[in-house]
Length: 193
Image (cartoon, rainbow, N blue to C red; front, side, top):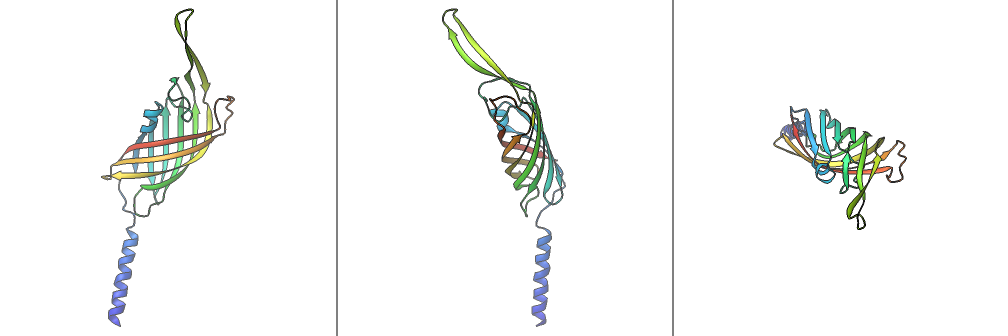
């Protein structure tokens, strides 16, 4: 009987010890990353900073230069002076990984600037010239939304993540060309420090 109690106490202690070590914590509390998908597809340059908090949560702040609205006209963009700032609160769902695995985040984004696209192109045979017409639209606005994604960590230093997000523009876009719902995607590469 005493052996059974001793065995039970040892098993309980070992399970308690494992439960305390579910998440292997790292001393690294920061991450800098960039969305490579936006860089290749839309020509936007993105820099993100993520500060790790306790309980597998983090604060996220990102800035995007030469931004676009969703992926409208990505093949026809001639110029973009748009800049956006995004803030998010990231919640990781893994019980075994430290700030990695599947995650969810609510977000807020503020964007200002204009995007110029090649709207119409034709060859004028009378004047023997190429005629190119441009269209410029304003992407100023504030939006709220959410996203989901997954992050992998390599050597406790490098991160690779994929995500998708959707946001609703709460500003007054007075352009029939743009939709009020903006989808975005990301393939992010980062470094923890």
